[in-house]
Image (cartoon, rainbow, N blue to C red; front, top):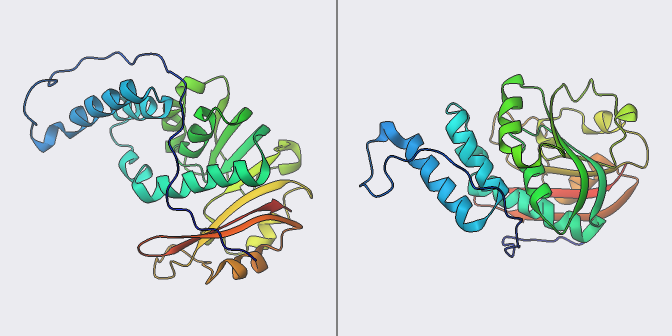
Length: 247
């Protein structure tokens, strides 16, 4: 089995979002105290959004403005982004560009759907973010407001979802280290459905109840019917593993 390691991704052309309008108090002033961190972060991100014309960065600026309690800095840190870029780019190479319905489980603030929807290399009709935490649903909608006609945030338990009724042609779960019995969950998904799965070897993290030591161990655990990709992405503290195939 070939291991594929990717740590960098080329920049891509992004579709121009509408300009984000809002008040700005400190555009030409010196940095303000820590109490004004959110205002400074908002000014910074909307400036980056204007420069890059990225709907995702525009969405992050809106999240900072509308949801100050959201942990968006953690959700969009460099490790999170690197793993999602790896997933996005490898999905394109291994499984193609066209999808009618992508469902991301444990989607949190909907960053991966946002990355997929703004990438013009893909042809995606609808991308959905499912999470058991009801507090993240409105944040995910704000983040993906530019794609409101193609994005949906859903509060649901992944074990209670009727996957046959869902009719997704791609199901994504990048948190398999949190699933006690991965194979039992995969058996809920109709045979032939394409999945993208990630896990890691970060055994020292208490919330990780089902880590794997290698990509081979991950593949053995998942037992996918077909396997289009199996690879590893080393990070500073752990290695992340990914499988793309069908159940």
